[in-house]
Length: 111
Picture 1: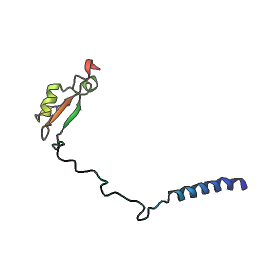
Picture 2 (picture 1 turned 90 degrees about the vertical axis):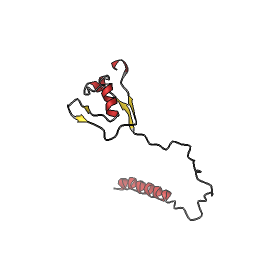
Picture 3 (picture 1 turned 30 degrees about the vertical axis):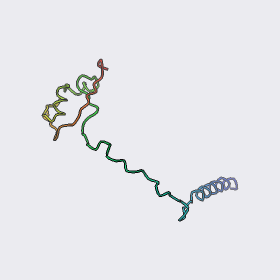
Picture 4 (picture 1 turned 180 degrees about the horizontal axis):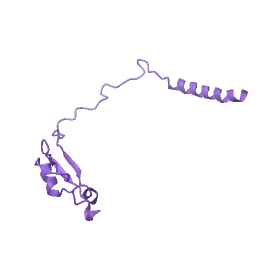
């Protein structure tokens, strides 16, 4: 019985020590911030226009997409421009608004 109390005592002692070490509540005045400790206004020299598009599209040219997708590059461009295209399954689809950009990322040499 005495051998099973020692591991229990060590576990309780370690847990209590860890809990006490975590109790670091800052008091008012402990943390002093400088008045200019912030990022200044960045100005308006950065782009503010949001563009919507697709940056990774495979067509039937790529082997991985070609196994399930039969739409070609021209179909992808027409779809991105907001025109109606017919999917591999025969459904007619059209975007509610055209994309601002499209990146066709077909694999080279069918890999």
